[in-house]
Image 1: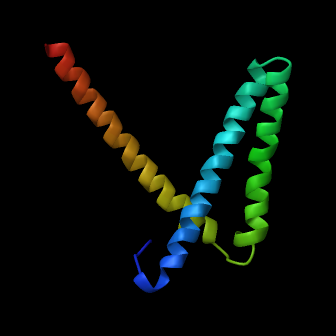
Image 2: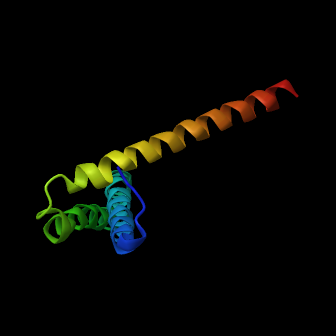
Length: 106
């Protein structure tokens, strides 16, 4: 799991940029699929280009960072990311339910 180490602060920024690029590529991929499917004309072309960029970014990241380190993607990015996003979603849902409960009672 992630442990902050002041001597290895550069590694923290590398992980930050890896997660940033991974989420950017995931966003491009999903929005590219939606835009290519529902769009027409120029919108469809833009969606296809977003989809292609969303596929190319992880391929480049694999050859730049992940190819030499076995388990780096799973242990450093995927599992902590799922835990953080999962915790954030549970917190948001609980807050939203409490908000709706208070609004419905008034």
